[in-house]
Length: 531
Ligand SMILES: CC(=O)SCCNC(=O)CCNC(=O)[C@H](O)C(C)(C)COP(=O)(O)OP(=O)(O)OC[C@H]1O[C@@H](n2cnc3c(N)ncnc32)[C@H](O)[C@@H]1OP(=O)(O)O
Ligand SMILES: CC(=O)C(=O)O
Image (tube, helix red, strand yellow):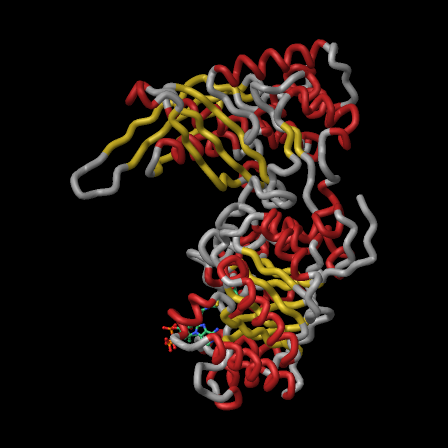
């Protein structure tokens, strides 16, 4: 890592450009709660929205007036004045003033083709629009961020005009000039070359705003910073217009933990993973497991040889300690595991060498069962029982003698399933019965009916998820299925697995594992009569 004394301001546009993303819509309350979280992690600027656009956007700024932010400055966003008009009476500029934010962002055209075809005005009038808008807002006491829309395309098409736009904005008093890669088509080597060229110009400080249409928004942002940018814009999780914006969840740790730049967020990087998931929850989007730094896969190791390195020297297998960004390491169980993975999982029961007989048994069992269709990566509850069996520490709760299910339906009525079950419990025969809608619910009901009088803890357990996957669909109705059941006691959650050609039997297996997992792991806490 090279040490810099250089600072970079992190400018978050999750609540403005982020809202321009497909299927992203934050309510006013969401926006306010996200803004608070962005402040807590040390984001320097929070672009809250486009106040002219709609009432919700304007309301955000009204609410912000009575909120306190410990570090971040709130920024409102709008365009330069319209061609031929005056800044002081322009709707965009008035809306920015009414937002009463200390910082305002105005976007202006840099690409001549846009000036002519989109604004329908002249190169000269566009420069006047930019100069008037910035100087008016500066006279009104605002910190002004000037976003140069389509800067990179404009530069490639007509360098002199793009430079003229930069100089005009700089002379008008903009505090920072932000070249924007609006259509996301620029590559890192182009960013580097263009920022190198800009170094010889006498300008206000430069920033950078990149979109991810070539998958290079983060790389472009880092290239811009290396090329002299002192302000970088992006969104949490990289969500934004089209393919998204530069992802701050990668930019912030790259700059502060790897490249040695100063930023206020550097002191709070351990909050990054939870911020990413908080925003995902507000966006109602399932977090991307494979997202760098913050995804649950980022520090998850599956290959046996990799798990072996983790056991011996974890830092040789990971580019960074995941806890620095609030993430954590996992070693995944699978057919690709080796004995190191088993040793890692068995740490719960003590320290074992790879040549311990239980380790040998478990690696064989794991591979055989995975070959048979079981999957333990997401069902560690069932694997826990296999470990206990291999160590001779397993306590059986459920010994089936038989179950009987019968589904019936009469015209126009809901179908029902009647179930009856006989179990052997410490030499006694116990019977349970239930009538529910589906067979799995009926199995569960019958099992609880039989055992709850003797094991009241069963009443405190709930099934929270039931998932079925057909393993060989080509076998049609004779296909094998894998069932996952997730259960909870209110505090912890665990998942178990069953596999069979019969979905009821696969469910039974996962159900039995679910109750036995709890029984084995809480045995010592149970009253003597429930053991
Ligand atoms: C690159 C970016 O991400 S910029 C941010 C873009 N974000 C958004 O557009 C989201 C919010 N936008 C909105 O709510 C609406 O588009 C509004 C309220 C801003 C404008 O709505 P309307 O007045 O109906 O205009 P419409 O959206 O159809 O067209 C955009 C107008 O802005 C003008 N415009 C575009 N860029 C600029 C600029 N830099 N300076 C001045 N005017 C501009 C266009 O020329 C067009 O004007 P015209 O109607 O006179 O031709
Ligand atoms: C300003 C902006 O969002 C862009 O040019 O992409």
